[in-house]
Image (cartoon, rainbow, N blue to C red; front, side, top):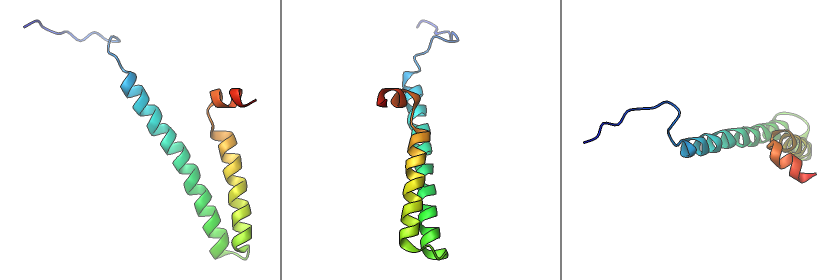
Length: 79
């Protein structure tokens, strides 16, 4: 059998890059969804803002979050 020697920088790492990108995307968008839901339910149940106040605030946070968190490539093609 031929010996295989490791050579730094010669491995195909496309799968690892795609997995890492997917993990970062899920963490980023999952965090936004969590923040929107926490804001909505906090304002709805724990303050006098009620359902409508919580919904409006959560929608504003969701819009701002999507605008700030989308990828730079998506932002350029949208305009």
